Length: 93
Image: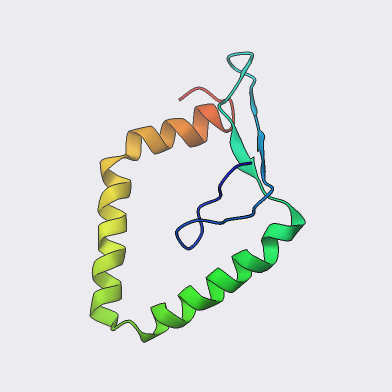
């Protein structure tokens, strides 16, 4: 069983591991979780709970959190570009 990460875990998920091919390298990427239909309701419940809490978060705090996310994306931009372009789509960078 694979644990999906939603709301600090997801006990009971029956997600399996899938792979994706990399045409440019003629090989497969590492596995990723493939959710099942039974995973949808807990995911929606977690999303709605998070949305309510997010909506009650003061705008300045939300802005600061989003700026931290942007900083992490910028700090890892090269890795993310490689993952999306080469690994996910098989295209050279």
